Image 1: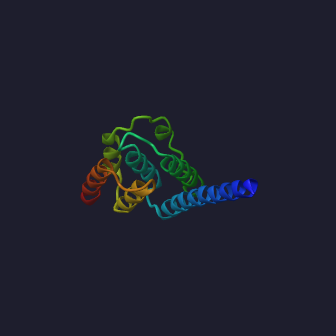
Image 2: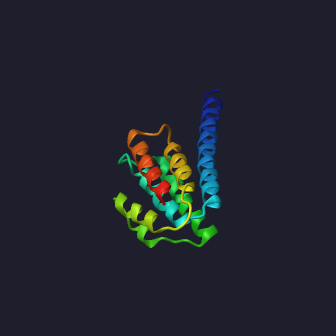
Image 3: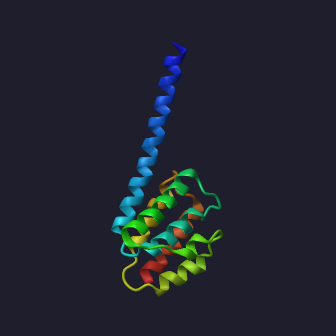
Length: 138
């Protein structure tokens, strides 16, 4: 009886873990396939993820899959981003300012990235507000 119960609990846990991972992968695929600015999307995602000075498991998983899918779909490999540990928002803002065209898609990216691990934090909201101002000006 104990073995059966333990097996059921382990099975439910595994299902929940795989369901969550599938949710994160699906989000990465959706964001990557829609993006007109895949390289910039990676920088914005990393800026939002690191905004609150902690990186959760779902955020790390999302970034891993975003980078992989952007590489596979768009052929984008960003060696500079790969080497960034502490992201400087000014670097991201300069990249935004240098990018032509409509950047409003990045607002949706930022919002979705911010919610991948739960509620949006105050610091993530600040970054998204700054991004909003930058994208509207561009």
